[in-house]
Length: 93
Image (cartoon, rainbow, N blue to C red; front, top):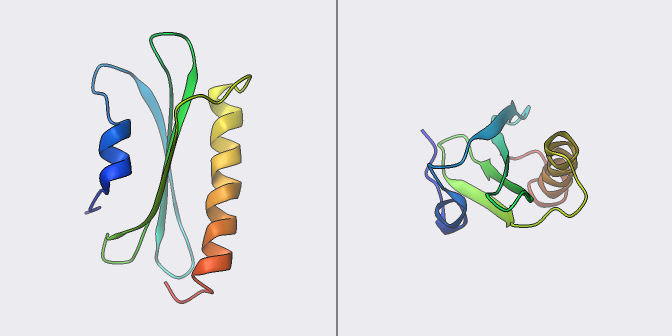
């Protein structure tokens, strides 16, 4: 179970459909990426990194990914999350 932080709740909107991707890191932490198109037609992005016990370690919400498709935004978020994990967690989870 993930314990979502404030950034997630700023992102959450049950009226909008989104794509979701999860990736488990070797240390057991989880990357969760979500992207959607706003009512205004803008790609929006959220990603979070959660520890083994589900605590939020890092969350980001990008309300306007100008010129990016959902797929492109999600690929960027994955790289950003992996970079954050490598720099911050040093494989300790």
